[in-house]
Image (cartoon, rainbow, N blue to C red; front, side, top):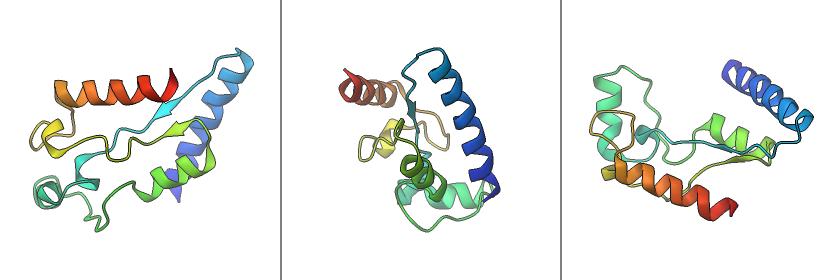
Length: 108
């Protein structure tokens, strides 16, 4: 609930600036691998001590953001485990290319 309140505040603020300046702003949520792949859930729980999240797919906060805002997008089914650097939250070059292609196709 606290995270949602903070996220909503910031997106509302950015959206107000975009509207004021007549900019069509879009937000793409880059999913963390621990929300997508079984292979990485234990790594995140044991090594990084993050809370275990049993579901796969968008987190609760991501689902809230995509439901509340028409300009927040989630790349469902776009990325694979091999698109992330192992035991890291960052995308590989291949993952970045997939995300760029998703963005280009979505908004061209």
